[in-house]
Image (cartoon, rainbow over all chains, first blue to last red):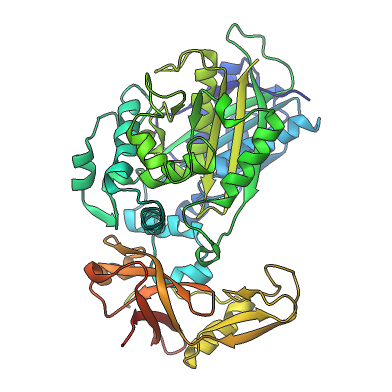
Length: 383
Length: 136
């Protein structure tokens, strides 16, 4: 069954210390329904992605609270947790509900409120995306995990600090044009390398910021009849990988990403070379290098050099990666990120993006959770 | 009351691992059916799903696969420890362990460096394996 993205929306990403997790979700959900021209009473099911609401705010029954906030009928409302991939997984469930005929209209929302909590509490919360029983006692942080990844990529492929920093430079340059992004100032390689150390070799600007926000997408069985081009879901796949760090055989690749993207390319009947635009999970600078290689966008071991040479930016590359500015610019309200990516790719395919990739017909979104514990890959096409 | 570092709530499989650490042994599992080496301990083999697993003690020697030095603590209670270095160690027996590196200046850490295990009691009941540069 064909399934479409009929509407998307997101709040500004950044600091919303006065707004709670539910309010943010309702704001994004309402805007997405309005954009899709769908009435709340027509929604058949809702999935809400969120990571730390229970840990930081001690609030359960999130999905039902969001559904009531949106004025939905008493339809199934399901919360989804997959760390940083929570929103991607929420979208996949909305798509599946439509594909199997359980819903004609499914709403996917991702939401996160982090800045109202003290930074040490947030850092501790984010570490819940690792295996607490086995990895927790070392005091490793999430930036620390990606520090291990950066060191491994440097050792195996000779990727340099300057190349890793060039990912930040590119994404911050893209983010200048995104009115919803948290950071809209350019940085230089020297700025990145000179920022304060967080987890060697990564520095402050190598890390996506702690942020608040929400994003949403309306998925429908009926082809949208609005004036804008219809956007079809060609694939929305999910895979798991090792959730404990010592289980990861090769830290320069995430098996969850390769598995999910292999399935997605097969289902959509395309290859990486057919894509014009990709939003991928650059939670840390080095993650974009690994993601580009895992998704088959750039040759393995060569992504650092290729990105530095402009292979994934406007006017130079055959495809543009993270035209929105990515997580590094847009911000990373953990449970919302996967749907902010869908918001951007949908706009690119409709030709309405803030910074448009000319002639984009096929786009992809990649959302990674935990230490590669799960990944979703969604391919959208102009229909 | 002084805050304490995070102590895992031990699941069944890890209980043996940390009990053995308290006795000064770093253990992994060997599958008697397919010879897979498994770390951390689990109920079934990660390769063939057999439950026919035995605990084996490692000699505790290996080399650093990757490392990172943390300048921002992972938990408020690690604040006094920064900077501290976390390493992935490839043990000679063929399993990989995530642990803290001690007795080593962060500037001196290198991939491939030889390290050996030591055991540090975090509380009376809980001991964790850590690594330090090999003595030779």
